[in-house]
Length: 291
Image (tube, rainbow, N blue to C red; front, side):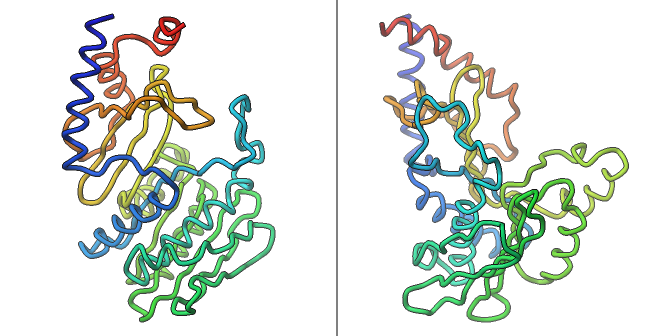
């Protein structure tokens, strides 16, 4: 037990040193929006005009710790929240900064209608962000944000799945020379598209879109793991020790699982190895020792 504590303490000091050099975890939805905006702006300035974003969907106030599924309505229930976050990011990109992203919350109208728009600034400086539903069943929509000049227009496709491949190709050709985002795609590998569409998906999506920003949460070896990606920093991985999954609260600071950012998204096996080395005791064992 003492060895485990020493390892965790040593890893925490390493995490602290890294935190002074690299960005840590977003502490709120607004912080995530500002980080995503900044990362996308840096990528756009580097000439990258096709980006993928992965966002953590903030839990609703009605979610309780004992709830098994915080989103019983699936993507349709999540859509208004992700739409609002995406509107803020697009606004910040088009008007070049987090201050524009923070002006107004966009409203978020859901996917029941064919289109919607929202006022994006109390001063009226920013143009409305429009929403065009691509698939009500899959909660997939196209968001378009006009900028102060045509070259600064940008767009995003929210929740695209394998059935929206043709929609992605159509939107890609429509948004020529402008920034286009894919937000929270429902596919991860080219194999998700099936054998007959692998080559088409590779050319239309995986060979064109690069990571623009990511904040992800999932379980690995019983620990709550969080990944971040910022351009051009790279990927960082954290373990939130003893975090309550639904409440997303933890009594300990997040533990960095590696010193320097990684150029590629870390694989599950790599994360498991790092957790085994840095946190030898399983979460259930630590819980028993606290009692």
